[in-house]
Length: 380
Ligand SMILES: Cc1cc2nc3c(=O)[nH]c(=O)nc-3n(C[C@H](O)[C@H](O)[C@H](O)COP(=O)(O)OP(=O)(O)OC[C@H]3O[C@@H](n4cnc5c(N)ncnc54)[C@H](O)[C@@H]3O)c2cc1C
Image (cartoon, rainbow, N blue to C red; front, top):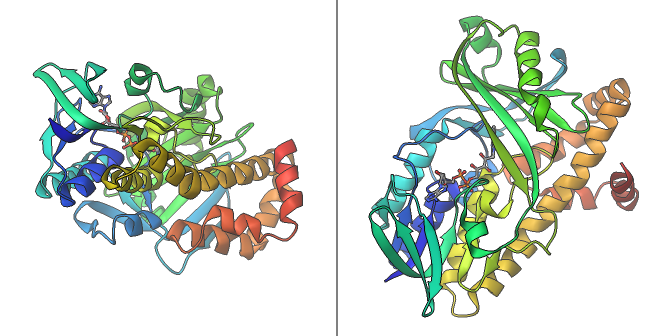
Protein backbone atom coordinates (compact mmCIF):
# COMPACT_ATOMS: atom_id res chain seq x y z
CA UNK A 1 0.00 0.00 0.00
CA UNK A 2 1.57 3.27 -1.15
CA UNK A 3 0.76 6.65 0.35
CA UNK A 4 0.42 7.98 -3.19
CA UNK A 5 0.54 6.73 -6.75
CA UNK A 6 1.33 9.32 -9.42
CA UNK A 7 0.29 8.50 -13.00
CA UNK A 8 2.50 10.08 -15.69
CA UNK A 9 6.09 11.29 -15.53
CA UNK A 10 5.71 14.67 -17.24
CA UNK A 11 6.54 17.92 -15.39
CA UNK A 12 3.41 17.58 -13.23
CA UNK A 13 3.88 13.94 -12.22
CA UNK A 14 7.64 14.09 -11.72
CA UNK A 15 7.38 17.24 -9.59
CA UNK A 16 4.56 15.85 -7.45
CA UNK A 17 6.45 12.58 -6.92
CA UNK A 18 9.54 14.53 -5.85
CA UNK A 19 7.63 16.78 -3.44
CA UNK A 20 5.82 13.84 -1.81
CA UNK A 21 9.02 11.77 -1.51
CA UNK A 22 10.98 14.64 0.00
CA UNK A 23 8.25 14.88 2.66
CA UNK A 24 8.59 11.17 3.41
CA UNK A 25 5.42 9.87 1.70
CA UNK A 26 5.89 6.49 0.01
CA UNK A 27 5.31 7.31 -3.66
CA UNK A 28 5.04 5.19 -6.79
CA UNK A 29 5.44 6.97 -10.13
CA UNK A 30 3.97 5.06 -13.08
CA UNK A 31 4.79 6.08 -16.66
CA UNK A 32 3.24 4.49 -19.72
CA UNK A 33 6.25 4.96 -21.99
CA UNK A 34 9.87 3.88 -21.62
CA UNK A 35 11.90 6.89 -20.42
CA UNK A 36 13.17 9.18 -21.77
CA UNK A 37 10.04 9.74 -23.86
CA UNK A 38 9.27 12.33 -26.53
CA UNK A 39 6.48 14.87 -25.96
CA UNK A 40 5.18 17.20 -28.67
CA UNK A 41 5.98 20.58 -27.15
CA UNK A 42 7.72 23.83 -28.04
CA UNK A 43 9.84 23.23 -24.94
CA UNK A 44 9.71 26.88 -23.86
CA UNK A 45 9.94 26.86 -20.07
CA UNK A 46 8.90 30.35 -18.87
CA UNK A 47 11.39 31.75 -16.37
CA UNK A 48 8.67 31.81 -13.71
CA UNK A 49 8.67 28.00 -13.68
CA UNK A 50 12.07 27.89 -11.99
CA UNK A 51 10.75 29.74 -8.97
CA UNK A 52 7.99 27.13 -8.70
CA UNK A 53 10.78 24.53 -8.75
CA UNK A 54 12.56 26.30 -5.85
CA UNK A 55 15.16 27.88 -8.14
CA UNK A 56 16.22 24.51 -9.60
CA UNK A 57 19.29 24.73 -11.84
CA UNK A 58 18.09 23.31 -15.16
CA UNK A 59 21.29 24.16 -17.03
CA UNK A 60 22.19 20.44 -17.46
CA UNK A 61 19.20 20.11 -19.82
CA UNK A 62 18.91 23.66 -21.14
CA UNK A 63 19.36 24.25 -24.88
CA UNK A 64 19.64 28.00 -24.40
CA UNK A 65 17.44 30.82 -23.29
CA UNK A 66 15.31 33.45 -24.97
CA UNK A 67 15.17 37.12 -24.02
CA UNK A 68 13.66 38.47 -27.26
CA UNK A 69 10.20 38.12 -28.79
CA UNK A 70 10.07 38.60 -32.54
CA UNK A 71 6.61 39.43 -33.90
CA UNK A 72 5.61 38.64 -37.45
CA UNK A 73 2.33 38.30 -39.32
CA UNK A 74 2.07 35.39 -41.77
CA UNK A 75 5.86 35.20 -41.74
CA UNK A 76 6.38 38.89 -42.51
CA UNK A 77 8.62 40.39 -39.81
CA UNK A 78 7.27 43.37 -37.85
CA UNK A 79 9.31 44.11 -34.73
CA UNK A 80 11.32 42.67 -31.85
CA UNK A 81 11.17 43.37 -28.14
CA UNK A 82 13.92 42.41 -25.71
CA UNK A 83 13.73 41.81 -21.97
CA UNK A 84 16.72 42.72 -19.81
CA UNK A 85 16.56 39.24 -18.24
CA UNK A 86 15.81 35.77 -19.65
CA UNK A 87 12.15 35.16 -20.45
CA UNK A 88 12.21 31.42 -21.04
CA UNK A 89 14.56 28.46 -21.12
CA UNK A 90 14.55 26.20 -24.14
CA UNK A 91 14.48 22.48 -23.48
CA UNK A 92 13.85 19.22 -25.28
CA UNK A 93 11.06 17.61 -23.33
CA UNK A 94 12.53 14.10 -23.32
CA UNK A 95 15.63 15.36 -21.49
CA UNK A 96 13.83 17.91 -19.29
CA UNK A 97 11.16 15.45 -18.08
CA UNK A 98 13.81 12.77 -17.52
CA UNK A 99 15.80 15.26 -15.45
CA UNK A 100 12.77 16.04 -13.24
CA UNK A 101 12.00 12.32 -12.94
CA UNK A 102 15.56 11.50 -11.84
CA UNK A 103 15.25 14.14 -9.11
CA UNK A 104 12.06 12.43 -7.92
CA UNK A 105 13.84 9.08 -7.82
CA UNK A 106 16.80 10.61 -5.95
CA UNK A 107 14.28 11.95 -3.42
CA UNK A 108 12.99 8.40 -2.87
CA UNK A 109 10.16 7.94 -5.38
CA UNK A 110 9.79 4.47 -6.85
CA UNK A 111 9.64 4.75 -10.66
CA UNK A 112 8.17 2.20 -13.05
CA UNK A 113 8.34 3.32 -16.66
CA UNK A 114 6.96 1.36 -19.63
CA UNK A 115 4.09 0.65 -17.23
CA UNK A 116 0.72 1.91 -18.47
CA UNK A 117 -2.07 2.06 -15.94
CA UNK A 118 -4.88 -0.02 -17.45
CA UNK A 119 -7.73 0.51 -15.02
CA UNK A 120 -8.57 1.99 -11.63
CA UNK A 121 -11.10 0.88 -9.04
CA UNK A 122 -11.83 2.45 -5.68
CA UNK A 123 -12.07 -0.21 -2.98
CA UNK A 124 -11.96 -0.19 0.82
CA UNK A 125 -10.85 3.43 1.02
CA UNK A 126 -7.99 3.09 -1.44
CA UNK A 127 -7.33 3.05 -5.18
CA UNK A 128 -6.38 -0.17 -6.90
CA UNK A 129 -4.63 0.22 -10.26
CA UNK A 130 -4.09 -2.51 -12.80
CA UNK A 131 -0.81 -2.52 -14.76
CA UNK A 132 0.78 -5.17 -17.03
CA UNK A 133 3.07 -6.16 -14.14
CA UNK A 134 0.29 -6.56 -11.58
CA UNK A 135 -1.96 -4.44 -9.40
CA UNK A 136 -0.85 -1.70 -7.03
CA UNK A 137 -2.75 0.15 -4.30
CA UNK A 138 -2.55 3.59 -2.76
CA UNK A 139 -4.43 5.88 -0.44
CA UNK A 140 -4.01 8.86 -2.80
CA UNK A 141 -4.04 9.08 -6.56
CA UNK A 142 -2.40 11.91 -8.50
CA UNK A 143 -3.44 11.82 -12.14
CA UNK A 144 -0.78 13.61 -14.21
CA UNK A 145 -1.40 11.65 -17.39
CA UNK A 146 -1.66 14.64 -19.71
CA UNK A 147 -4.29 15.98 -22.12
CA UNK A 148 -5.12 12.56 -23.59
CA UNK A 149 -4.70 10.34 -20.50
CA UNK A 150 -7.55 8.02 -19.53
CA UNK A 151 -7.71 8.70 -15.77
CA UNK A 152 -10.36 11.43 -15.80
CA UNK A 153 -12.64 9.11 -17.78
CA UNK A 154 -12.04 6.18 -15.45
CA UNK A 155 -12.67 8.30 -12.36
CA UNK A 156 -15.75 9.88 -13.92
CA UNK A 157 -14.37 13.39 -13.41
CA UNK A 158 -15.67 15.51 -16.24
CA UNK A 159 -12.91 18.11 -16.45
CA UNK A 160 -11.78 20.70 -19.02
CA UNK A 161 -13.76 19.71 -22.12
CA UNK A 162 -12.38 22.68 -24.12
CA UNK A 163 -9.59 21.51 -26.43
CA UNK A 164 -7.42 23.02 -29.09
CA UNK A 165 -4.76 21.50 -31.27
CA UNK A 166 -1.05 22.23 -31.47
CA UNK A 167 1.31 20.89 -34.09
CA UNK A 168 5.08 20.84 -33.80
CA UNK A 169 7.85 20.24 -36.36
CA UNK A 170 11.50 20.07 -35.39
CA UNK A 171 13.84 21.00 -38.20
CA UNK A 172 17.60 20.86 -38.64
CA UNK A 173 17.80 24.47 -39.79
CA UNK A 174 20.73 25.86 -41.78
CA UNK A 175 23.40 27.71 -39.71
CA UNK A 176 22.17 31.16 -40.85
CA UNK A 177 18.66 30.43 -39.56
CA UNK A 178 20.03 29.11 -36.25
CA UNK A 179 22.07 32.29 -35.87
CA UNK A 180 19.05 34.48 -36.76
CA UNK A 181 16.91 32.90 -34.02
CA UNK A 182 19.61 32.66 -31.35
CA UNK A 183 18.08 34.06 -28.13
CA UNK A 184 14.85 35.01 -29.92
CA UNK A 185 11.45 33.35 -30.21
CA UNK A 186 9.23 34.16 -33.14
CA UNK A 187 5.51 34.62 -32.59
CA UNK A 188 3.57 34.72 -35.86
CA UNK A 189 0.09 36.22 -35.58
CA UNK A 190 -2.99 36.60 -37.78
CA UNK A 191 -4.54 33.14 -37.32
CA UNK A 192 -8.35 33.23 -36.92
CA UNK A 193 -10.09 33.36 -34.51
CA UNK A 194 -6.97 32.96 -32.42
CA UNK A 195 -3.75 31.06 -32.46
CA UNK A 196 -0.18 31.71 -33.44
CA UNK A 197 2.88 30.17 -35.00
CA UNK A 198 6.16 29.91 -33.11
CA UNK A 199 9.86 29.36 -33.66
CA UNK A 200 11.79 28.30 -30.57
CA UNK A 201 15.57 27.94 -30.95
CA UNK A 202 17.24 24.77 -29.67
CA UNK A 203 20.80 23.49 -29.89
CA UNK A 204 21.33 22.80 -33.60
CA UNK A 205 17.64 22.83 -34.50
CA UNK A 206 14.45 24.86 -34.40
CA UNK A 207 11.09 23.92 -32.98
CA UNK A 208 8.41 25.35 -35.28
CA UNK A 209 4.70 24.98 -34.71
CA UNK A 210 1.20 26.33 -34.72
CA UNK A 211 -1.46 26.34 -32.03
CA UNK A 212 -5.06 27.03 -32.97
CA UNK A 213 -8.29 27.91 -31.22
CA UNK A 214 -10.54 25.15 -29.87
CA UNK A 215 -12.27 23.26 -32.66
CA UNK A 216 -10.01 24.64 -35.42
CA UNK A 217 -7.45 21.83 -35.60
CA UNK A 218 -8.26 20.57 -39.11
CA UNK A 219 -6.23 23.14 -41.02
CA UNK A 220 -3.24 23.02 -38.70
CA UNK A 221 -0.91 20.94 -40.89
CA UNK A 222 -1.43 23.22 -43.89
CA UNK A 223 -0.95 26.28 -41.69
CA UNK A 224 2.31 24.84 -40.37
CA UNK A 225 3.57 24.04 -43.89
CA UNK A 226 2.75 27.59 -45.04
CA UNK A 227 4.48 29.01 -41.99
CA UNK A 228 7.61 26.91 -42.62
CA UNK A 229 7.62 28.20 -46.21
CA UNK A 230 7.33 31.83 -45.01
CA UNK A 231 10.30 31.20 -42.73
CA UNK A 232 12.33 29.84 -45.66
CA UNK A 233 12.44 26.42 -43.98
CA UNK A 234 10.25 24.44 -46.38
CA UNK A 235 13.24 22.33 -47.45
CA UNK A 236 14.89 21.95 -44.05
CA UNK A 237 15.38 18.39 -42.77
CA UNK A 238 12.45 17.43 -40.58
CA UNK A 239 13.61 15.59 -37.45
CA UNK A 240 10.25 15.12 -35.78
CA UNK A 241 6.59 15.98 -36.37
CA UNK A 242 3.81 15.57 -33.86
CA UNK A 243 0.43 17.03 -33.01
CA UNK A 244 -1.19 16.94 -29.59
CA UNK A 245 -4.25 18.54 -27.99
CA UNK A 246 -4.11 21.26 -25.36
CA UNK A 247 -6.97 21.37 -22.84
CA UNK A 248 -8.22 24.43 -21.01
CA UNK A 249 -10.05 24.66 -17.69
CA UNK A 250 -12.45 27.56 -18.15
CA UNK A 251 -14.25 27.69 -14.85
CA UNK A 252 -14.09 26.76 -11.18
CA UNK A 253 -17.11 24.58 -11.93
CA UNK A 254 -14.88 22.14 -13.84
CA UNK A 255 -13.72 19.61 -11.22
CA UNK A 256 -10.04 18.91 -10.53
CA UNK A 257 -10.46 16.35 -7.74
CA UNK A 258 -12.71 13.79 -6.16
CA UNK A 259 -12.17 12.17 -2.76
CA UNK A 260 -8.43 11.40 -2.67
CA UNK A 261 -7.87 11.54 -6.44
CA UNK A 262 -6.42 14.76 -7.85
CA UNK A 263 -5.94 15.90 -11.46
CA UNK A 264 -2.69 17.74 -12.23
CA UNK A 265 -1.36 19.75 -15.17
CA UNK A 266 -2.86 18.97 -18.57
CA UNK A 267 -5.09 16.25 -17.10
CA UNK A 268 -6.95 19.10 -15.36
CA UNK A 269 -6.77 21.46 -18.35
CA UNK A 270 -4.28 23.79 -16.68
CA UNK A 271 -2.92 25.54 -19.78
CA UNK A 272 -3.54 29.17 -20.64
CA UNK A 273 -5.39 30.43 -23.69
CA UNK A 274 -3.07 33.35 -24.43
CA UNK A 275 0.18 31.43 -24.93
CA UNK A 276 -1.13 27.82 -24.75
CA UNK A 277 1.73 27.03 -22.37
CA UNK A 278 1.22 24.54 -19.60
CA UNK A 279 4.58 23.60 -18.05
CA UNK A 280 4.51 26.27 -15.32
CA UNK A 281 0.89 25.40 -14.44
CA UNK A 282 1.75 21.68 -14.40
CA UNK A 283 4.54 22.33 -11.88
CA UNK A 284 2.39 24.72 -9.85
CA UNK A 285 -0.45 22.19 -9.63
CA UNK A 286 2.04 19.49 -8.57
CA UNK A 287 3.21 21.69 -5.69
CA UNK A 288 -0.39 22.33 -4.62
CA UNK A 289 -1.36 18.65 -4.96
CA UNK A 290 1.55 17.50 -2.80
CA UNK A 291 0.64 20.12 -0.20
CA UNK A 292 -2.98 18.91 -0.16
CA UNK A 293 -1.98 15.23 0.17
CA UNK A 294 0.38 16.07 3.03
CA UNK A 295 -2.23 18.15 4.84
CA UNK A 296 -4.55 16.59 7.37
CA UNK A 297 -7.89 17.86 6.00
CA UNK A 298 -10.12 16.90 3.07
CA UNK A 299 -7.64 16.40 0.22
CA UNK A 300 -10.01 17.12 -2.69
CA UNK A 301 -11.39 20.25 -1.04
CA UNK A 302 -7.93 21.55 -0.13
CA UNK A 303 -6.56 20.96 -3.63
CA UNK A 304 -9.59 22.41 -5.42
CA UNK A 305 -9.49 25.51 -3.22
CA UNK A 306 -5.78 26.04 -4.00
CA UNK A 307 -6.23 25.60 -7.75
CA UNK A 308 -9.23 27.95 -7.73
CA UNK A 309 -7.31 30.52 -5.72
CA UNK A 310 -3.82 30.41 -7.25
CA UNK A 311 -4.13 28.98 -10.77
CA UNK A 312 -7.62 29.63 -12.12
CA UNK A 313 -7.41 33.45 -11.88
CA UNK A 314 -4.37 33.23 -14.18
CA UNK A 315 -6.19 31.03 -16.67
CA UNK A 316 -9.19 33.38 -16.62
CA UNK A 317 -7.03 36.49 -17.06
CA UNK A 318 -5.01 34.84 -19.86
CA UNK A 319 -8.27 34.00 -21.61
CA UNK A 320 -9.49 37.59 -21.37
CA UNK A 321 -6.17 38.89 -22.74
CA UNK A 322 -6.22 36.25 -25.46
CA UNK A 323 -9.72 37.16 -26.64
CA UNK A 324 -8.91 40.84 -26.79
CA UNK A 325 -5.42 40.58 -28.30
CA UNK A 326 -6.24 38.04 -31.00
CA UNK A 327 -9.49 39.80 -31.86
CA UNK A 328 -7.61 43.08 -32.38
CA UNK A 329 -4.82 41.44 -34.35
CA UNK A 330 -7.23 39.67 -36.71
CA UNK A 331 -9.74 42.54 -37.02
CA UNK A 332 -7.36 45.54 -37.37
CA UNK A 333 -4.00 43.86 -37.94
CA UNK A 334 -1.97 46.96 -38.87
CA UNK A 335 -3.36 49.09 -36.08
CA UNK A 336 -2.93 46.28 -33.54
CA UNK A 337 0.66 45.59 -34.60
CA UNK A 338 1.57 49.29 -34.61
CA UNK A 339 0.01 49.77 -31.18
CA UNK A 340 1.67 46.71 -29.70
CA UNK A 341 4.99 47.84 -31.18
CA UNK A 342 4.84 51.25 -29.54
CA UNK A 343 3.06 50.60 -26.25
CA UNK A 344 6.07 49.38 -24.30
CA UNK A 345 4.02 49.19 -21.13
CA UNK A 346 2.28 46.07 -22.52
CA UNK A 347 5.61 44.41 -23.25
CA UNK A 348 7.02 45.21 -19.86
CA UNK A 349 3.87 43.71 -18.30
CA UNK A 350 4.15 40.55 -20.41
CA UNK A 351 7.84 40.19 -19.57
CA UNK A 352 7.10 40.59 -15.84
CA UNK A 353 4.55 37.78 -16.06
CA UNK A 354 6.93 35.46 -17.94
CA UNK A 355 9.69 36.13 -15.41
CA UNK A 356 7.38 35.49 -12.46
CA UNK A 357 7.51 39.07 -11.16
CA UNK A 358 3.80 39.57 -11.77
CA UNK A 359 0.71 37.69 -12.93
CA UNK A 360 -1.72 38.13 -15.81
CA UNK A 361 -4.48 38.77 -13.28
CA UNK A 362 -2.53 41.57 -11.57
CA UNK A 363 -1.48 43.20 -14.86
CA UNK A 364 -5.05 43.03 -16.17
CA UNK A 365 -6.51 44.57 -13.01
CA UNK A 366 -4.20 47.62 -13.16
CA UNK A 367 -4.78 48.32 -16.86
CA UNK A 368 -6.41 51.71 -17.31
CA UNK A 369 -10.12 51.00 -17.86
CA UNK A 370 -9.80 47.40 -16.59
CA UNK A 371 -13.59 46.99 -16.43
CA UNK A 372 -13.99 48.14 -20.03
CA UNK A 373 -11.23 45.77 -21.14
CA UNK A 374 -13.01 42.84 -19.48
CA UNK A 375 -16.32 43.62 -21.16
CA UNK A 376 -14.67 44.21 -24.55
CA UNK A 377 -12.94 40.84 -24.21
CA UNK A 378 -16.19 39.16 -23.27
CA UNK A 379 -17.85 40.46 -26.42
CA UNK A 380 -14.85 39.89 -28.74
C1 LIG B 1 2.72 21.19 -29.70
C2 LIG B 1 2.69 21.72 -28.28
C3 LIG B 1 3.59 22.72 -27.90
C4 LIG B 1 3.62 23.18 -26.58
N1 LIG B 1 4.57 24.09 -26.24
C5 LIG B 1 4.66 24.49 -24.94
C6 LIG B 1 5.70 25.38 -24.53
O1 LIG B 1 6.57 25.78 -25.31
N2 LIG B 1 5.76 25.76 -23.22
C7 LIG B 1 4.83 25.32 -22.31
O2 LIG B 1 4.91 25.71 -21.13
N3 LIG B 1 3.85 24.45 -22.67
C8 LIG B 1 3.76 24.00 -23.95
N4 LIG B 1 2.80 23.10 -24.30
C9 LIG B 1 1.94 22.52 -23.24
C10 LIG B 1 2.77 21.48 -22.44
O3 LIG B 1 3.35 20.56 -23.32
C11 LIG B 1 1.89 20.76 -21.43
O4 LIG B 1 1.11 21.72 -20.73
C12 LIG B 1 2.71 19.95 -20.44
O5 LIG B 1 3.36 18.88 -21.09
C13 LIG B 1 1.81 19.39 -19.33
O6 LIG B 1 2.57 18.54 -18.50
P1 LIG B 1 1.88 17.29 -17.76
O7 LIG B 1 2.92 16.75 -16.85
O8 LIG B 1 0.58 17.70 -17.21
O9 LIG B 1 1.53 16.25 -18.92
P2 LIG B 1 2.47 15.52 -19.98
O10 LIG B 1 3.73 16.22 -20.14
O11 LIG B 1 1.61 15.30 -21.19
O12 LIG B 1 2.79 14.10 -19.30
C14 LIG B 1 1.79 13.13 -19.16
C15 LIG B 1 2.46 11.77 -19.02
O13 LIG B 1 1.49 10.78 -18.66
C16 LIG B 1 1.81 9.57 -19.34
N5 LIG B 1 0.61 8.72 -19.39
C17 LIG B 1 -0.50 8.89 -20.16
N6 LIG B 1 -1.36 7.88 -19.94
C18 LIG B 1 -0.80 7.06 -19.03
C19 LIG B 1 -1.21 5.83 -18.42
N7 LIG B 1 -2.36 5.23 -18.72
N8 LIG B 1 -0.37 5.26 -17.50
C20 LIG B 1 0.82 5.84 -17.19
N9 LIG B 1 1.25 6.99 -17.75
C21 LIG B 1 0.45 7.59 -18.66
C22 LIG B 1 2.28 10.06 -20.70
O14 LIG B 1 3.05 9.06 -21.38
C23 LIG B 1 3.11 11.29 -20.32
O15 LIG B 1 4.46 10.98 -20.10
C24 LIG B 1 2.71 22.65 -25.62
C25 LIG B 1 1.78 21.67 -26.01
C26 LIG B 1 1.77 21.21 -27.31
C27 LIG B 1 0.78 20.14 -27.69
